[in-house]
Image 1: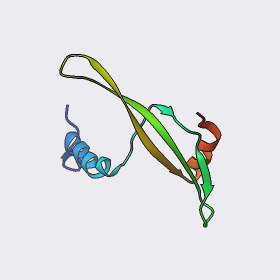
Image 2 (image 1 turned 90 degrees about the vertical axis):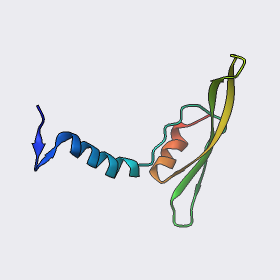
Image 3 (image 1 turned 180 degrees about the vertical axis):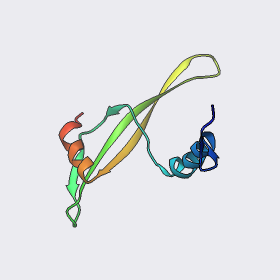
Amino acid sequence: MIRVFRGYTRRALFYFFYSRFMYSLNRAQLIGNVTVDPEVRALPNGQRVANFSLATNRRYTDSDGVQQDVPEYHNVVMFGKIAEIAEQYIHK
């Protein structure tokens, strides 16, 4: 059963909203190890900023068939309330 909403099928509405709104959402989830404790400071306007580094591993199989682990380091910057939460809960 296909539902119709104002002349549009459900699938057409899904693609419309997905293409319009989901591509404008910038989000990344990094799962790894914190390399240093967050450095939290305040900007001149009073907004808090937290900086820290995160290490993740990228695993791949090379041409010889051997699995390789390569560490990748990411610099993370958080602003506002999220920076305060990072200061409380993120530790090396």
